[in-house]
Image 1 (cartoon, rainbow, N blue to C red):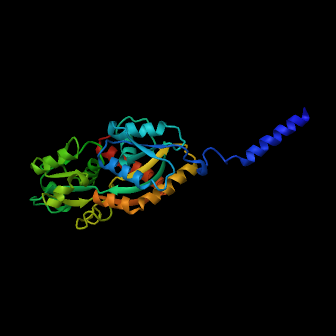
Image 2: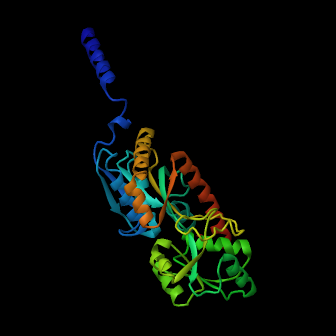
Image 3: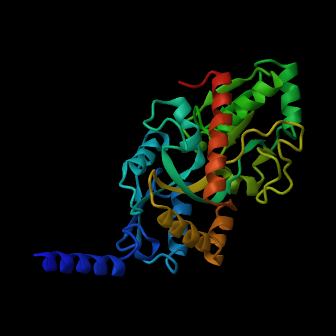
Length: 325
């Protein structure tokens, strides 16, 4: 009997020595296809960039990646599905930062303290955040727009694509900083803002520049400021908010890969390293440039800290503006 026990123990020890270091070890992952949940519909900027990253990642990721669109509740339906998934690396999410930094302050979402409720992996691209006027507007820049608003309270009409969007929050930040009074109109998306701007129903509008790129290029509408600290390569002649003397607390949304909380470090590292290779390919760079994105690389630690900071900064603006829940 003792000999049998010793033999069994030796067998188990032998198996343990030869076995992989763990089910989550990076040399064992991925063993099957990965699902990427995109929290907005097919054909939009978030979907387009996510699919482009997946395509660029094919030479580096050992298994296929299926892109699945989960829409609803300003992106939070898809985000919550990712957070509820098993943290084994086979379900990841792709989203613009605002879904994770803005929405918890605006609606009753199941995730309350980003980024502690999920695992950031990598950021690969960002979108410009601009305000624009009709081409024949007498206001040439944001400073002139603000000066007009100060001299004419509540006469200036601003439009944005929806309450709580980064476009809206950026406008509220300008109001809070300058003390101006304007008439703010929410619309049902970028297209409605652009239509209202072209029709003269609003004096200035904020929207995703990708939505109006053809009109910018045709000279029908004109960007007057890029939100943030520096100019954007897409609009090199347009000054930044900081350059014009405004605080630049609200910057453009950045696109991130993330997963459920509790993903093994080896899997997070695998995804980070291989998607970093993907974002550096000529094919991915071309997609970004063609569609008005600019490259932004944030590694896992830097991305986590950026999300944490933005969550606090944007939450304060939302609270001061009285647009939160």
